[in-house]
Amino acid sequence: EAAVRRYAGKPIINSVNGKQQIMDEIFPLVAHYGTNVVGLTLDEGGIPDTAEARFAIAERIVTEAARYGIGPDRILIDCLVMTASTNQRQAEQILRAMSLCKERLGVKCALGVSNISFGLPARPLLGSVFLAAAFGAGLDAPIMNPGSKRFMDTVYSYRVLSVEDEGSTGYIERYAGIVSLVILVFVGGKMIVESVRELREPESCPATRLTWATIGLEAVATAIDAFVVGVSFAAEGK
Image (tube, rainbow, N blue to C red):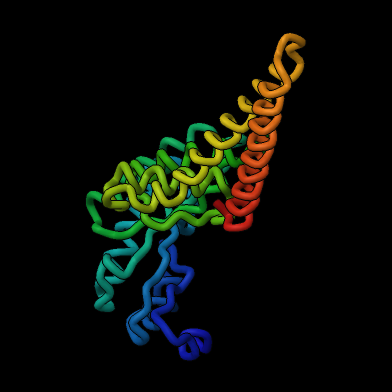
């Protein structure tokens, strides 16, 4: 409560769950201070194995919240990601549970996305694929590392497909420069190869060699430009 009083904006309280005692303690604060709240799909019996059981807990949380005047628009349900290394069949159940919550309860959904890959190699790869699947199931608020390029690639790509990024402006701004960089490197490299080949040609006259030497220098300059652009993009996190 002390933190909620001091927070300047609208805080999100993390969290309630299906345990009645916890809801009795937290929902009065949520109602009094007008905050949002995360609801975890677990109760006295722990975390259920099935999507339907997770949904039932979420429904209980939403119903109890309504008694305090807290609408579903202020609730983020977290269906609790389990690692695929020990709970492989849970991934599908988690996504289905989230879809049920979105369709039937009208809440927002959050997920700790990176938990899915705990204990497995190439974690960003598996995590990014799960993130894409979760977006398709209705995920609103992924809990993830925004510094992960692979995760952010998924976010920017999905925003185009879901029309959140109208005109693909954000996607183009992020990736068009990378395409230009690849073209610069390719053109510069090709020019260098051609110039070296001509300079080695014994029959070429001095003027021709001078021309190809100039082209070679231009190619090197192009390669340097490409390097500078690459460093710039790296510095900007692109």
